[in-house]
Length: 138
Image (cartoon, rainbow, N blue to C red; front, side, top):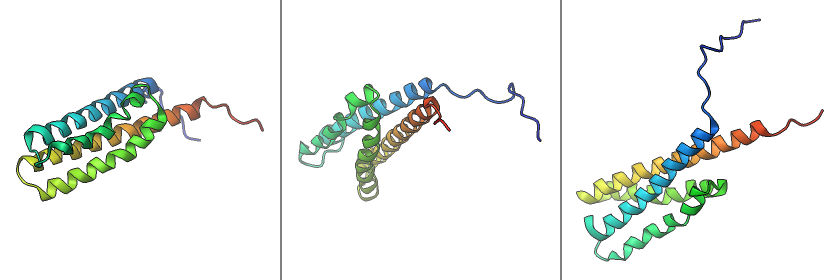
């Protein structure tokens, strides 16, 4: 039987609460940045003609209360919603030019950050819940 590794040599696992706080901060910041980017893009920086396209950011405001309240379900469906913004960013980054292409690339990066934060948040919360669950009786 191989000896167990020295406990002092092993890195300490991150506290779930710290990871949950970090992922919430990244998710909320990413949503806020996507809203600000979408408004600035369509109203001032590179408008597409009709400023009504700024309403495309309204769906991003819906998950904010749930993200702030750490609602697991909100993190799950937000990780799906963000792919619409990712797709728009990829399409416009490859088809537009100039300022619009740069803003689209930024939208892609923010979308990836939001997805990663939501996925990590859900994963950590589910793992923490599984560790707390009692084992079934034999």
